Image 1 (cartoon, helix red, strand yellow):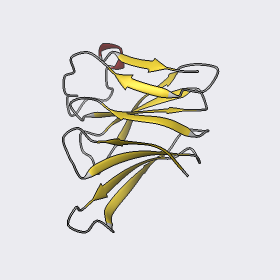
Image 2 (cartoon, one colour):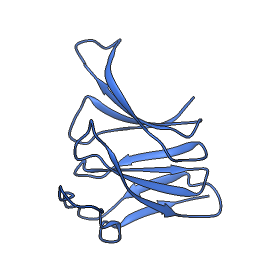
Image 3 (cartoon, one colour):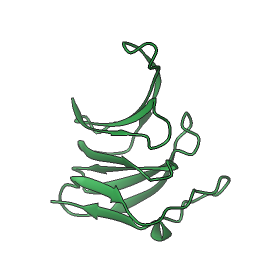
Image 4 (cartoon, helix red, strand yellow):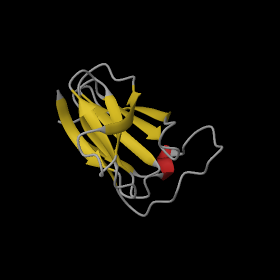
Length: 126
C-alpha cells in the first residue's frame, strides 16, 4: 500500500508516492480527468518500504527514504525520464523522513552525477 505522497513543487499534476513494496512511483495526472492517471514511472532499487519522498524546492531532484536504511536521490529534471543520481547509506535502521533544506539551485543537465554534497540533503531517521 501507499505510505507517503509528495506533490511536485512546480508541476501541479505530478506526484511522487512511496509504497510498502519498496517502490517509489511518479504519477502524472490530468485534472480534467480526475479518475485517470496519464502515466507513471517506477523508481526501483529500495529493498524495503519507502516511508518518505520529497522533491527539491526547484523540482529537479526527488529523494526517497526507506526501511532498508538507504536514501536514493533521483534526477527528475526530465520528469518522464527520471534517473538515479545518488545512493546514500543513511542509517542501520529505517529512514522515516527525507527533507531538502537551504537555497537550492537547479541540477545542470548533461552531468553524469548530481553533486549531492552541495545540495544539503538533510535526513531524519528513527
